[in-house]
Length: 295
Image (cartoon, rainbow, N blue to C red):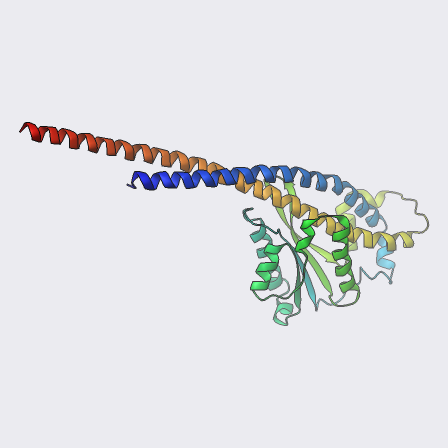
């Protein structure tokens, strides 16, 4: 059994750690509230825009000049990985990173062998991992989370859209954690470009049955809606990941605090047992000494 000094030092260390995890839990809970409100309030707008886009799906398919729906042979692939800038959030980052690498090595294995798969990393954790493993990261957007606004995210979305329309890449996917609630994050892999018109109608349900009146023309609106929809889709993915990060960190810190509390109870029990044993030994020594003097 460890001596009293060792147990006392370990108790102090665990108590200090518990204070840190408890504080981080409260900070994450506060940030989660704001991030959750942002994504919950934004989703209806993004979903309604998707419904309108689905209702004009025929125009998208028939428009030969629609540069965002061009289906090309998947020779050059761009994968966008969204993680966080900080750790201590459980498996949040590792799950997204693992899914991205798995997708690259399985779905696009031939392109990987030909070194035709590049990456964009939004978040330091993902960027650091990809760089250390030797993957080609063409852009690191970690600074987005320092001031998360639509305009900053739209700049990155414009860059990605430009790379696709210029023919630099034939296919773009986004991998991120979608926010469900504080304790649940859904790992999501979405095709960003080219847009899949047929799936828009399926996802929007009965949107195709809505009779919209288009002004000035359906074709003009399509050309305006598609770039805006893509920027909103990218922004929604960032907001989802941001809220998921704080939810995952709050949950992880809550579990760490609970574990520290249990460990403190065990250490207190060990400390009491060790102290009782020490006191008993001292009493026995005193009694033994007294008996020896009597003799």
